[in-house]
Amino acid sequence: MGTDINSSISDPTTDNVSDIIRRNYDPNGCTTFSPEKYTPVHIAAHYGHKAFIEYILENDDEGHKYITKTTNDRRKMTVLHICAECGAPKTKDEEEKEEEEEEEDDKKKKKKGNDRKYMKDFTV
Image (cartoon, rainbow, N blue to C red; front, side, top):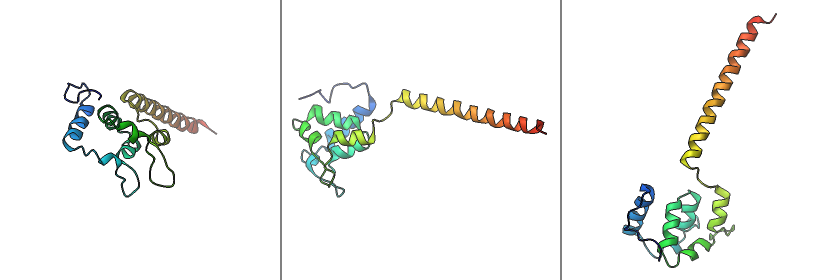
């Protein structure tokens, strides 16, 4: 099996997920379909819960089967399909950079608006 879930984990998100799974894990749960025809692993992929998927792969001998299992709807999507469709979740650095770019754009728009107002005062 994979890493020991009782070992110290530096990422509190992963640690919290592994703790919840360890207490509530149902070995048959990953093969059960929701009313929307998705397994828990498909749902985790859709919402970007990487820690859950990593846990399943590392700690369940059947983990690879859950990753390759298709949804039970007409689209027949695997976890990889869902990840590709939904995109990878942004890292903290990417979110911060995006916020900085948005702030910079807002400053430029505000300046441009002020420039137009100033120019309007001088048009004949």
